[in-house]
Image (tube, rainbow over all chains, first blue to last red; front, side):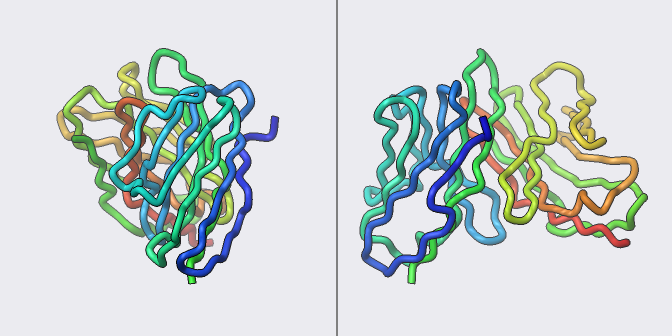
Length: 115
Length: 111
């Protein structure tokens, strides 16, 4: 297993368009997380799944954002009607729930630029 | 509420000299604390974690951190800096699986 993968690595879109990102976690991991990182800042939590259930969503996740993990494996993050403020690096992480704080393994991210 | 404050946005050290990256935390609960490193164009990598066991935590690549409850600090140290240590470092606190990151410290190594 080569770790968490994310596609695409870069996405340039025009304001108002919809975009979708994909995350493939480490295969045996049951938890999957999405974070957003803007320039000069640390990543901010967006949402997380345990298997296919979405357990928590941040207030940062507006109605234009939706995330799914339909079969408890890969996940998609969709942003509708993109705005310039959505420009950021979108990071995915996965972990194996083990009764305590589990190490989250991060992917390389998808860099979104909204023109 | 939980948060971390990284006291320095940039740190520069000469190769072979000690590294100190400072982090203070705020948490209503007994915290789980982490340090992650982010090299350019690479994913975040866990350096070390504290989960209420030993207060001195050893991590990868010679890094270690000491949890001091009285000072609410979790500073990251390394005895001797290497050129490959140049990166962005994040202090992180965890609660209910949600990681809260500091704003990061950029470490520059002077040859």
